[in-house]
Image (cartoon, rainbow, N blue to C red; front, side, top):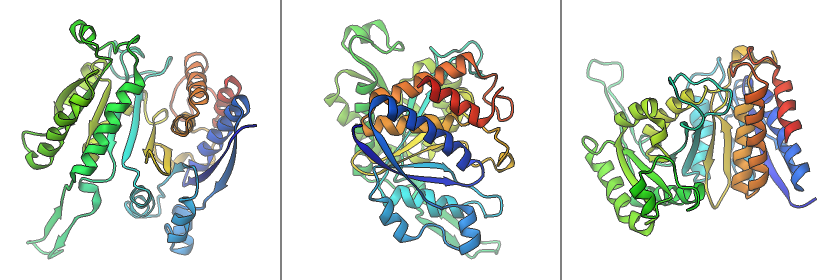
Length: 369
């Protein structure tokens, strides 16, 4: 057995523990095949702990989590806890504490999975959104004055530094290079781009015509960095146009980079085009620190304990974690196994309609790994 990875597991709320169990099952199978192991440690963080103890995320737990190779999250969200308390107290606190400045969201349609986009298939829907994860409107700058009066004022500021913008852009340019080689040019490029040696495309998604200060910064940095990546074609889309093309021509996209709020919105649209929240995974990444990976569909409390929830998003989150840890072959083996299961076994991605239980889907993937 080769390296052992120390992984913190936050099963969380609702169906989070169920999908986490299946992700761990598949990760163990991958480790057994490719010669590495795991030390998993569970952390009781989420709605139940908050309702019982009043604690959300103690500073001591943050310091402990800092010592792990990675974090796998099940789900956060409890029906008896006011929205925003757990999200800000756990998710945002961890993202900011560990400077997880990249939110990585692959949008990939797997074989056998239905998409609401007419005449589109797996060859058309295969791109990645890089959402800047540390700045923008989510930093909490703002407030309320004269609450409860007719003159109440609310402000929430979108704030970015050149440092935040540039590191997200450089990560995105590098990601295009990782996704492609000169022997496999991106299918969306025109012949003249391929002839010019381009291997892929990075699209900046913004709103330069209205949000001129913030996206003026993004656009200047984008064009200043681009000459360092002559093998990457660059493009720009306003966010409203981006949503249109994600529906009409998703094959035009390779890697999209955008700011925090816009990224949060367009990635949920992307998730629907790839088959829904049951298959969509994401990573909160610090390339030089502790990263956290999660299914993006939420805790789905109405399905808790019924063994009917789709665990594939959590399993794909585990695959993303392995890729970030450098276990590329193992990560690809998990993704290939998921594609085989969606293409040959499962009837649907929806909870209770998969044709298998939660545990059985996990077993199917683990067996194929």
